[in-house]
Every structure is written in structure tokens, then in C-alpha cells.
Length: 190
Image (cartoon, rainbow, N blue to C red):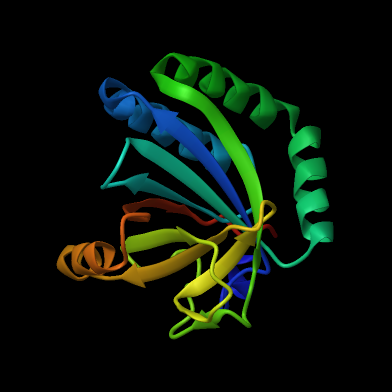
């Protein structure tokens, strides 16, 4: 998703999740910082958001937004053709393996504007995110993405921790609170 296209929710949201051991969080952050440096240095050309759990089990999520399946395929091709980046990131993934309590997951979800209400969530906006998983068909407060299994992920962003914590508490037991950890914006190519 180009930086210029980020004025609305993505049509497709990739959600890659690392499930961390509690004692692996700090080491994972260091490896993620290195991955972010490599993405900038080795020409990764797609914006993404890294978020870290503040409630529930220790997790780090990586969110990529796309406007179409064609854009997903284009990014995959570019990544595969960038062998230096792919090799460097694969080494980091291997080093992260010892820090995980479960295998990472990678899912694609699809924006449901018909079920979304309120201010839309846009990747990179909002310091804190409250994410709730539901199966309801009713319009929901927040930006709704539907997973392939039919469950729905509702995303709401807040600027302050107090607001986010209050929202998470009122949203029910499936609500999770996350902090935006890093928003990678590629440097424009000339």
C-alpha cells in the first residue's frame, strides 16, 4: 500500500502474528528493530505497522494493508526478487524461533465497510489499538475486517492509554489492547 493511499482503511489486511514467550519480548524487540533497519536499507517498498500486546499473552503483530489481490501478488514478487532482503529477514525469523511459545500465523482479512461504524481506522494512525474478535453480523463501532473463517476483527484506535484501557474493558473478554510499536514507511523511490 503506497503511503499516499493511506487515507482510508485497506481493502485487505494481512495480520502476521508472533506468539512470544514472556521472557522473549525484549529480545524479539531487538530483532524486530534490526528487521526494520534492513527493510529500509535493502529497499522494502511497502508500509506496515508493528503492534505489541499490552493485554493478554505476549504477542507482536505485523499489519500490512493492500487495496487489491494484485497488490498482494506484486509485493510477494518484489520480495522474492529481493534476495538480499529475503535472506536477511529469514535469518531474523530463524533467530526469533526460540522466543516463541507457538508457531507464527499469517492471515488475510477483508474490510467490511457495511459492518463498520464510526471513525475509520487507518494503518499508522492511533497510538493504541483495541482489537476485538466477534462473529456478529450487526454493524459494530470500529473498523471491521472479516477473516477467512468468518470471524470478524474490529479495530479501534485511541491516542491515550487511559482511553484505550477503558474501551478494552468495556468491549468484553475478547478485546485486546495493543500499542503501536513501529510504523514503517518506505522511502519514495526516484
